[in-house]
Amino acid sequence: MDNQEIIVRQAVPDDKKYSTTITDEMESSANARGTGIAKRSPEYIEKKIDEGKAVIALTPKGDWVGFCYIETWSHEEYVANSGLIVSPEYRKSGVAKRIKQTIFKLSRKKYPTAKIFGLTTGLAVMKINSDLGYEPVTYSELTQDEEFWAGCKSCVNYEILMSKDRKNCMCTAMLYDPKDHYEPEETKAFFEENKTGFERLLRFKQWKFLDAFRRKDKKGGGSLKSFFALFFN
Image 1 (tube, one colour):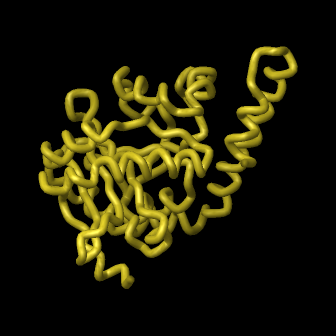
Image 2: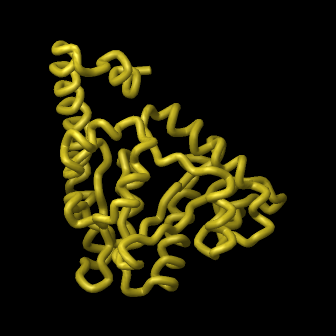
Protein backbone atom coordinates (compact mmCIF):
# COMPACT_ATOMS: atom_id res chain seq x y z
CA MET A 1 0.00 0.00 0.00
CA ASP A 2 1.20 3.51 -0.80
CA ASN A 3 2.41 5.31 2.32
CA GLN A 4 0.23 8.31 1.50
CA GLU A 5 -2.92 6.17 1.60
CA ILE A 6 -2.30 5.39 5.26
CA ILE A 7 -4.22 7.66 7.64
CA VAL A 8 -2.10 9.21 10.42
CA ARG A 9 -4.07 11.21 12.98
CA GLN A 10 -4.64 11.90 16.66
CA ALA A 11 -6.18 8.83 18.28
CA VAL A 12 -9.82 8.95 19.45
CA PRO A 13 -11.69 6.80 22.02
CA ASP A 14 -12.91 4.37 19.35
CA ASP A 15 -9.25 3.49 18.70
CA LYS A 16 -8.93 1.85 22.11
CA LYS A 17 -9.97 -1.40 20.42
CA TYR A 18 -6.41 -1.61 19.06
CA SER A 19 -4.74 -1.34 22.48
CA THR A 20 -3.92 -5.03 22.91
CA THR A 21 -2.61 -5.30 19.34
CA ILE A 22 -0.37 -2.31 20.01
CA THR A 23 1.12 -3.59 23.28
CA ASP A 24 1.61 -7.09 21.87
CA GLU A 25 3.55 -5.68 18.91
CA MET A 26 5.60 -3.45 21.20
CA GLU A 27 6.74 -6.47 23.20
CA SER A 28 7.29 -8.64 20.14
CA SER A 29 9.36 -5.97 18.43
CA ALA A 30 11.52 -5.36 21.50
CA ASN A 31 12.21 -9.09 21.85
CA ALA A 32 13.13 -9.36 18.17
CA ARG A 33 15.58 -6.45 18.38
CA GLY A 34 17.05 -7.62 21.64
CA THR A 35 16.55 -4.18 23.16
CA GLY A 36 14.33 -3.22 26.03
CA ILE A 37 11.45 -0.81 26.33
CA ALA A 38 9.35 0.14 29.30
CA LYS A 39 6.45 -2.30 29.15
CA ARG A 40 2.99 -0.82 28.83
CA SER A 41 -0.40 -2.39 29.39
CA PRO A 42 -3.44 -2.03 27.11
CA GLU A 43 -5.01 0.04 29.89
CA TYR A 44 -2.12 2.48 29.80
CA ILE A 45 -2.47 2.89 26.03
CA GLU A 46 -6.21 3.44 26.43
CA LYS A 47 -5.55 6.13 29.04
CA LYS A 48 -3.25 7.98 26.64
CA ILE A 49 -5.93 7.85 23.96
CA ASP A 50 -8.57 9.19 26.35
CA GLU A 51 -6.22 12.03 27.33
CA GLY A 52 -5.74 13.03 23.70
CA LYS A 53 -2.03 12.22 23.91
CA ALA A 54 -1.69 9.60 21.19
CA VAL A 55 -1.30 9.32 17.42
CA ILE A 56 -2.41 6.30 15.43
CA ALA A 57 -1.93 5.14 11.83
CA LEU A 58 -4.56 3.07 10.04
CA THR A 59 -5.32 1.82 6.56
CA PRO A 60 -8.46 3.19 4.86
CA LYS A 61 -10.11 -0.15 5.79
CA GLY A 62 -9.31 0.33 9.45
CA ASP A 63 -6.37 -2.04 9.85
CA TRP A 64 -3.88 -0.95 12.49
CA VAL A 65 -0.52 0.30 11.13
CA GLY A 66 1.30 2.26 13.85
CA PHE A 67 1.12 4.18 17.10
CA CYS A 68 2.94 6.65 19.38
CA TYR A 69 2.01 8.54 22.55
CA ILE A 70 3.01 11.52 24.69
CA GLU A 71 4.36 11.41 28.24
CA THR A 72 5.10 14.44 30.43
CA TRP A 73 7.70 14.76 33.18
CA SER A 74 8.98 17.30 35.72
CA HIS A 75 5.68 19.19 35.92
CA GLU A 76 5.34 19.27 32.10
CA GLU A 77 8.79 20.83 31.64
CA TYR A 78 9.75 17.78 29.58
CA VAL A 79 7.77 15.80 27.03
CA ALA A 80 8.64 12.42 25.55
CA ASN A 81 7.17 10.98 22.35
CA SER A 82 7.20 7.36 23.43
CA GLY A 83 6.24 3.90 22.30
CA LEU A 84 6.68 4.41 18.56
CA ILE A 85 5.67 1.14 16.93
CA VAL A 86 4.79 0.17 13.37
CA SER A 87 3.26 -3.10 12.18
CA PRO A 88 6.01 -5.26 10.56
CA GLU A 89 4.43 -5.23 7.10
CA TYR A 90 4.51 -1.41 6.98
CA ARG A 91 8.05 -0.83 8.23
CA LYS A 92 10.51 0.99 5.97
CA SER A 93 7.55 2.55 4.16
CA GLY A 94 7.99 6.02 5.64
CA VAL A 95 4.98 5.74 7.93
CA ALA A 96 7.15 5.91 11.08
CA LYS A 97 8.38 9.32 9.98
CA ARG A 98 4.81 10.53 9.43
CA ILE A 99 3.81 9.30 12.89
CA LYS A 100 6.79 11.06 14.48
CA GLN A 101 5.99 14.27 12.61
CA THR A 102 2.36 14.15 13.76
CA ILE A 103 3.12 13.36 17.42
CA PHE A 104 5.79 16.09 17.42
CA LYS A 105 3.28 18.67 16.16
CA LEU A 106 0.72 17.50 18.73
CA SER A 107 3.32 17.79 21.50
CA ARG A 108 4.26 21.32 20.42
CA LYS A 109 0.58 22.29 20.35
CA LYS A 110 -0.25 20.85 23.78
CA TYR A 111 3.02 21.79 25.49
CA PRO A 112 4.56 24.72 23.54
CA THR A 113 7.23 25.52 26.15
CA ALA A 114 8.26 21.95 26.99
CA LYS A 115 11.53 20.31 25.99
CA ILE A 116 10.83 17.26 23.84
CA PHE A 117 13.23 14.36 24.22
CA GLY A 118 13.67 10.76 23.20
CA LEU A 119 15.90 7.75 23.79
CA THR A 120 16.66 5.39 20.94
CA THR A 121 18.99 2.54 19.99
CA GLY A 122 18.24 2.90 16.27
CA LEU A 123 19.95 5.02 13.63
CA ALA A 124 16.68 5.30 11.65
CA VAL A 125 14.90 6.96 14.57
CA MET A 126 17.90 9.24 15.12
CA LYS A 127 17.53 10.41 11.52
CA ILE A 128 13.80 11.05 11.90
CA ASN A 129 14.42 13.03 15.10
CA SER A 130 17.19 15.03 13.43
CA ASP A 131 14.82 15.95 10.61
CA LEU A 132 12.48 17.44 13.23
CA GLY A 133 15.16 19.52 14.95
CA TYR A 134 16.30 17.19 17.76
CA GLU A 135 19.96 17.26 18.81
CA PRO A 136 22.00 14.47 20.43
CA VAL A 137 22.57 15.31 24.11
CA THR A 138 23.94 13.79 27.28
CA TYR A 139 21.61 12.11 29.75
CA SER A 140 22.16 15.00 32.17
CA GLU A 141 20.09 17.23 29.86
CA LEU A 142 17.04 14.99 30.16
CA THR A 143 14.42 15.03 32.88
CA GLN A 144 15.69 13.81 36.23
CA ASP A 145 12.17 12.81 37.29
CA GLU A 146 12.54 9.57 39.25
CA GLU A 147 9.29 8.26 37.82
CA PHE A 148 10.72 8.46 34.29
CA TRP A 149 13.84 6.51 35.17
CA ALA A 150 11.79 3.99 37.15
CA GLY A 151 10.08 3.17 33.86
CA CYS A 152 13.40 1.76 32.62
CA LYS A 153 13.29 -1.05 35.18
CA SER A 154 11.46 -3.33 32.75
CA CYS A 155 14.14 -2.74 30.10
CA VAL A 156 16.66 -5.54 29.55
CA ASN A 157 19.44 -2.93 29.67
CA TYR A 158 18.49 -1.53 33.08
CA GLU A 159 21.54 -3.03 34.79
CA ILE A 160 23.78 -1.19 32.32
CA LEU A 161 21.96 2.10 32.96
CA MET A 162 22.39 1.81 36.72
CA SER A 163 26.02 0.68 36.46
CA LYS A 164 26.67 3.97 34.63
CA ASP A 165 24.86 6.01 37.32
CA ARG A 166 22.17 6.90 34.76
CA LYS A 167 24.72 8.85 32.72
CA ASN A 168 24.85 6.45 29.77
CA CYS A 169 23.30 3.31 28.35
CA MET A 170 22.62 1.59 25.03
CA CYS A 171 20.21 4.36 24.04
CA THR A 172 21.21 7.67 22.50
CA ALA A 173 19.47 10.71 23.99
CA MET A 174 18.06 13.42 21.72
CA LEU A 175 16.38 16.70 22.65
CA TYR A 176 14.37 19.54 21.11
CA ASP A 177 14.41 22.69 23.22
CA PRO A 178 11.91 25.32 21.94
CA LYS A 179 13.88 28.08 23.68
CA ASP A 180 17.30 27.10 22.36
CA HIS A 181 17.51 24.96 19.25
CA TYR A 182 18.91 24.72 15.75
CA GLU A 183 16.55 24.74 12.78
CA PRO A 184 15.55 21.32 11.37
CA GLU A 185 17.55 22.01 8.21
CA GLU A 186 20.66 22.40 10.38
CA THR A 187 20.16 19.31 12.53
CA LYS A 188 19.26 17.28 9.44
CA ALA A 189 22.47 18.40 7.71
CA PHE A 190 24.49 17.70 10.86
CA PHE A 191 23.14 14.15 11.03
CA GLU A 192 23.93 13.45 7.38
CA GLU A 193 27.46 14.82 7.79
CA ASN A 194 28.06 12.71 10.89
CA LYS A 195 26.01 9.61 10.07
CA THR A 196 29.08 7.36 9.95
CA GLY A 197 30.17 8.69 13.32
CA PHE A 198 26.77 7.95 14.86
CA GLU A 199 26.90 4.40 13.47
CA ARG A 200 30.30 3.95 15.05
CA LEU A 201 29.02 5.36 18.33
CA LEU A 202 26.18 2.83 18.48
CA ARG A 203 28.60 -0.01 17.71
CA PHE A 204 31.09 1.33 20.24
CA LYS A 205 28.44 1.34 22.97
CA GLN A 206 27.64 -2.29 22.25
CA TRP A 207 31.32 -3.25 22.26
CA LYS A 208 32.19 -1.22 25.36
CA PHE A 209 29.29 -2.45 27.44
CA LEU A 210 29.77 -6.00 26.19
CA ASP A 211 33.41 -5.87 27.30
CA ALA A 212 32.34 -4.64 30.72
CA PHE A 213 29.92 -7.53 31.10
CA ARG A 214 32.58 -9.97 29.87
CA ARG A 215 34.95 -8.88 32.63
CA LYS A 216 32.14 -8.94 35.16
CA ASP A 217 31.13 -12.43 34.07
CA LYS A 218 34.69 -13.73 34.58
CA LYS A 219 34.39 -12.58 38.19
CA GLY A 220 31.14 -14.47 38.54
CA GLY A 221 29.00 -11.37 38.90
CA GLY A 222 27.22 -11.09 35.56
CA SER A 223 25.28 -13.00 32.95
CA LEU A 224 27.38 -12.85 29.79
CA LYS A 225 25.27 -15.50 28.10
CA SER A 226 22.10 -13.44 28.46
CA PHE A 227 23.94 -10.29 27.35
CA PHE A 228 25.22 -12.01 24.21
CA ALA A 229 21.64 -13.05 23.49
CA LEU A 230 20.61 -9.39 23.34
CA PHE A 231 22.72 -8.79 20.25
CA PHE A 232 23.45 -12.05 18.49
CA ASN A 233 20.20 -14.09 18.61
